[in-house]
Length: 284
Image: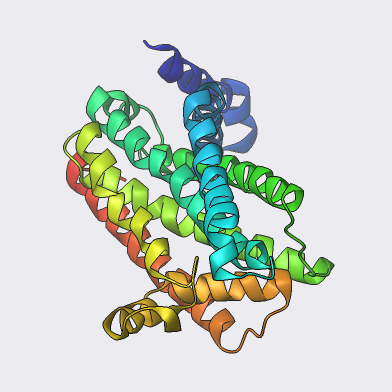
């Protein structure tokens, strides 16, 4: 049995010992305990993979940082001669960072589906779909860390947020919600893909959306037809709400729209992922 499957099997065995069964006589509670233990093992597995995959982590940080440096120092003078462009662009860079980091989830899920790992989990008393939970939680932790690094670099080059503690907490909650949404979308893409290579390509459209939003320039400066799209796609209100929280611009209805878009997309993404998982594995 491979190391990952053996570790999960050992975790399950430790929660279903004869002593535990004798004490409880409650199969449902024992089953729930085994499920939690298995999910914890799978989350740990995904976190270890994320820590070991140094190249993926570096790319998730380096690409947004390079974009931020390019837009701030190459285009920033033309877009905002007063030098305040860095404050405008950082919220968009934060969401771009989350997208780059979450993209690896599609590849990881596709690898698990095609390598036989999930098939081995089906023989264990647990939800095979717990492997998706592991990838999602690991992505959330990894991308929150990467976001912190990007914000630190932004401060070094002149980003000056005016948020108080409450606004910072709301901003972090919004970032975490967005990471959760986009990670589930990438997980669903990984489940829908026939190979890891195709999973890597299908998610490109999600990474492209911030460039056609208010992330880097105000939408009103775009051509009319593009303004309509940018105004009504989900990334724009999320960026506007985050920008409002961090640098104190007027939020208006962007906060409600951001949460609404995230909630709707998250429900759709979870449903899509569950449907694709059941179709491919035959069991949740």
